[in-house]
Amino acid sequence: MNASVSHSLSRWEGALRAGASHFQRGEARGRVNRAQRRIGLRPKHISLAVLGLSLLMFGLSRAYLFAISWDGFAVKTVLLDCRVESARVELEAALAGSRLGNIFLLDIGRLKDALERHRWVGEAVIRRDFPATLRIEIRERRPAAVIDAAGGLRLISRDGVILGSPEAAPGADLPLLLEGEGFRSGCDEKLALAWACFDALDPELRSRVERLDLSEFGNAVLVLRGDPTRLILGADRFAEKLALYLEAETWLKGRLGELAYVDLRLFQDRMTVKQAAPPPQEPPPAPLLPIPAKEAD
Image (tube, rainbow, N blue to C red):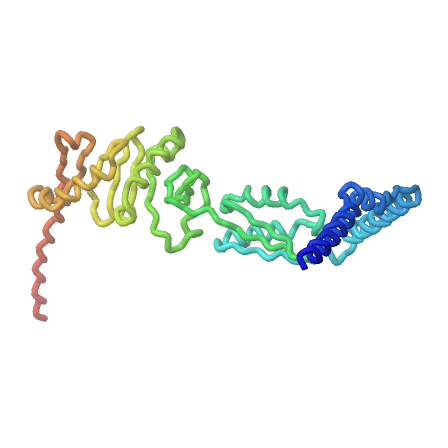
């Protein structure tokens, strides 16, 4: 029994060794390599590729010529979004008088630069709406104050652009900037002082500013709404100086009455105060002359 089993096992081991000899890795790799074929690039393939590319370029060129010459792509409608009525009217008139041409050939950058040269236009955003419409959104400059310049009262933006008469921004409760010579000299420096003063104040206090006098170089003189007192602030620490005045306002006016000015430039040491001149008294009314009695006939 044991001899028979041993003989069978020997037969199976021999068969396995014989089979293993047929599966050599080198032979399998060789057969796979021989199965792969190398495809060469022939002249007809190159000719077909060149022909296809030529047809594609020809089609694109014809499509381009059609796009830039077809009347359906000429700009016919301009939709302008501008919240300042006077600026919108002026811009629409300028756009109506210009031929914008084909929507594909339109130079958006050049049109944007032209629009942004208008005093009210801070930024112009232009979008093409095919086939024949332009959408233009105007982001307006915001008036920051009313300036009493040589030409009269004008709105002015933070970047120093004169925007027009105050009627262009109805309802805007803006502070008035004054200067003895109408801002003919030192305008940039004086405006910078004004913006620094406004920026130092909180929104509630800033809304109370009625006017700011910049006649003296490096010195801001402020007047609050409903209070004629001139507050001399100098060139720095505006919020601290105003807070000191507002804290002492009731006491000062209770002792001295109405004030002409309060000089706060040396506020750490003292506060200089001048009383307002009393209003002129009206003369008493003249006594009535007696009416003579009517003589009897």
